[in-house]
Length: 297
Image (cartoon, rainbow, N blue to C red; front, side, top):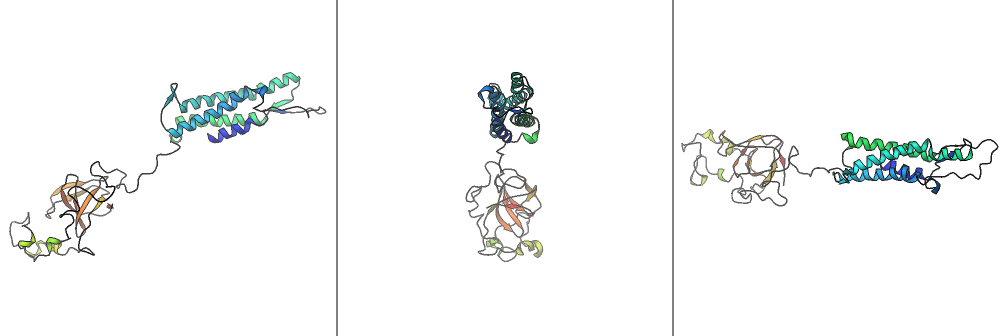
């Protein structure tokens, strides 16, 4: 569109007719008009200005990307109509118009097609074709300014975090207070007591009615790797690449929730390779499969 408009501007300053001077004739004093010559005034608005205005309307309409109407038509529709009108004017002017009038005035067929009108026809033809394609082909309908790239840090799969539980803009606020006693407690704080349980080892396990559990009942918790420095776990936000089950914290196989892609969840503790995650409604459970998760701040 812009290239066609520039070509029309250049063509308007070039000769609109050419002179084929007969042998022996003196054609040195003959003036050859262009699109801006006052004697050919209808040529300027009908061929050149109409095409330039059409290109401007189409470009502005593509940049706006909306369907705002002007006198019942969108800017793209106005541009397409004016481009077609400029094309028809170029055809009629090229094969008639000033050239025919000049030949009739001299009585000789010495005037031909000028380079200005030829370039104007090419420009208006390209302009009309582009205007029609921009209305019909999806590849030509896209906004010239584009829609922009998605914001970095979005969850796996391109989905945005759910309202009310989205990725925080600053800090790590979240349901249940990740900085509170539960989320910020030292990792493995309740597992350093002697095996078998005592008054300081927490209450009895929900799944075990007998107090003296066999020695193999809690080997996994005893062998969990400790955090590197400081002995504390820093809560962080994460998203899962696929639906993952969330199991009860007591170590049973009961599934309490399912983590879905496109939502940020809060990791409040770590148990070996597993994470203790908190859902939107405040439920906490163990995420055993942590492969491929996307970690936030």
